Length: 601
Image (cartoon, rainbow, N blue to C red; front, top):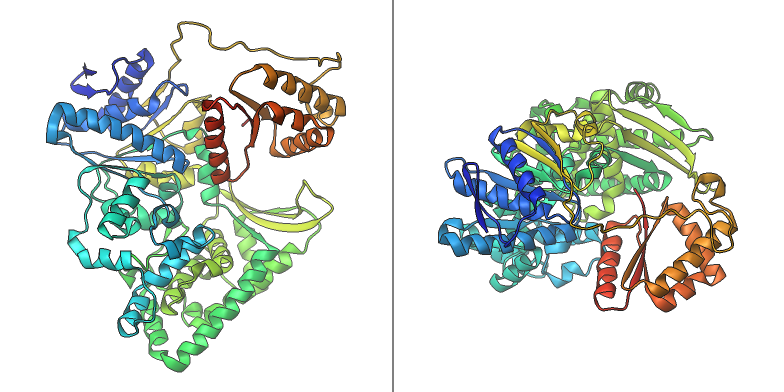
């Protein structure tokens, strides 16, 4: 349907529109007109995504003199693909009515693991290994050696992409990740680097929260996004947690052991370069005297990770003299690793602020705040100079330098917490040192400052007035919409006793009662035997869910449940949970039925 919303002609690809969708579009338009940020809450299942996409794309079509780019951030790859599928439907509808004038370029951007089409690279086990396998074939120095030695393996898709040069472009259209891979195979071009290149030209970009909120990634991927952009954070009820995680670092004994091995390997590489190409190390030293800011733009295949500090907090000055020489820098990192190892030798929980922690490092390890601040950039520069491509093997020393840079940069909004063991297993020593960010506004502040409009939307943003305080911003629009219902769709019931008349509850002092676990299990067995298709069973925490499922397995209740329906379980791994949800839906759709065990948050 096509309708007027004030001065904007809205193209909506369905025959009917809910009242709340219309109200949602109206408030969103007012926020765009005011060039300000907004908070919009609308229940899940009311067509929030298509309402948002329809309004923003129609807004751009109605006001071509003010071209606006849409940056749409999702939590998972599944949500990204779903958003792009909705956008493809909308784009086809607009093109049918407007012709070529409605053409746009919309792409999804994800990691190499999700976009790579080189079978040898994809054979790696995880995302970090795929990244490293790609760099081993695409780094500028590897390609330079391969030009002289044909036995050195490169990536044919990347080579074809580089040969195509300015001709390597995507035609207008909406491209899901699958579409990008198919187009890359057809043309013989690398879909990942093609998508990276086309991001700056696309009208709509859909990618993960981290591409804007994590400084290490945003500094590489999103640095060229124009200010005249509308940024949407969808399903943003946990955006504060994402912001906090982006600036938090955990260090364990395994991290320190791995960092020690990394330093030994780097030292071997330095000695090798001294013997074969000392001029490269001297050139790096001279460049560091002038400052890292003069490094210039790296080739796209060499770009690694940016500084973990926020852009406004990175000083454009020369690297401290005591870490300009590679061997001196390694001595500093060894002292830092040794100091952290000593701090993990504790039997009590300790909490400290960044200022006193840095003062302690200075007193015991002789490393000052400025040196700490430059650790991450100095490591990045050194690894590029040493032409190291297997970056997945250096994750431990990267974590240490990430920690050092953050603790050396920020004096507020962080705490250092040292715990001698995991509270779930207090009898097993497993000390962890966490640099914990507790100010979500730090990570999201550059986004609010830089972009014209930021839309934070979700099905649940209650209490909605909490988010401006958590994220420290002033929305021009803050609205919550209710779902319009023609009939009662839900029948809530509270169960207080089981079939044996014993009390049942998940309150803390009753959780471990065997009778409670048994009665909940029997209730679920009765439910799965009569309820068609799907059942979702929520628990109060992951640990309680593990405990109850183990109890049901031992008592045979789980076996009874599985006689009626398939069982899927949410984990703390996003990829596993997304796969479990997909299979849960398939089981429900095909009539087999399923139970999904999840954690209520």
